Amino acid sequence: MCKRKRDDTATEAEAFVANAAPAVASEASALTRGLTLKGALYNHCILNGQKRVENRPFRIKPGWYALHTGVGKLAAEDAKRIHARMGGACLPDECSLPHGVIVGAVHFCGGLKHSDCAEDHWATGPICNVIDAYCALRRPVPHRGALSLWKIKPDALAEVQAQLASAPVHRNADVSSFFLRGRPSIA
Image (cartoon, rainbow, N blue to C red):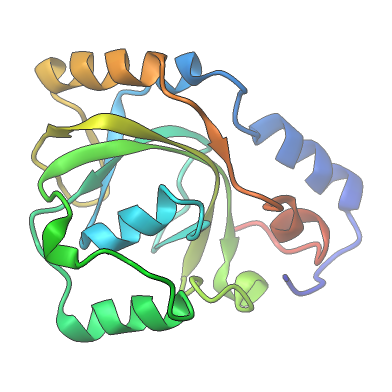
């Protein structure tokens, strides 16, 4: 999946294990920051284990973050690209999904250069932040998003943390391949 860059497999494996998501959602419920994605289809794919990287111009520190869907909706051509990436899988219509809300939480275990993950059809870079676990909220929580990473407001934070405390943690299959198979350079 990733290109071979160096022979430091033991160090990369240790880093992957150290950054791996905890088995309990209570760790997710301690989050205080969120990130916004434009387009509910992206978050839908993340919360269904189909999108395992989040592309940003910066590396996101390993840990749990609230997953927020911005108020903006995807352009029709972007939605078509997502449908193509999913190989014709049945996806909901962008307009039928909630916007302007926190929909779940994601755990990032590391960030890689795009060249190391170019074979993943979601990877566009420049930094591909690897999602190894996620939790969906039963009820989306209204919140205003922002660029980059942002602090969740106290009233919304209490509701998000309460839901995450009992939410099941879902693990993405085989994200270790990003770090172990090709021995990528960590961004």
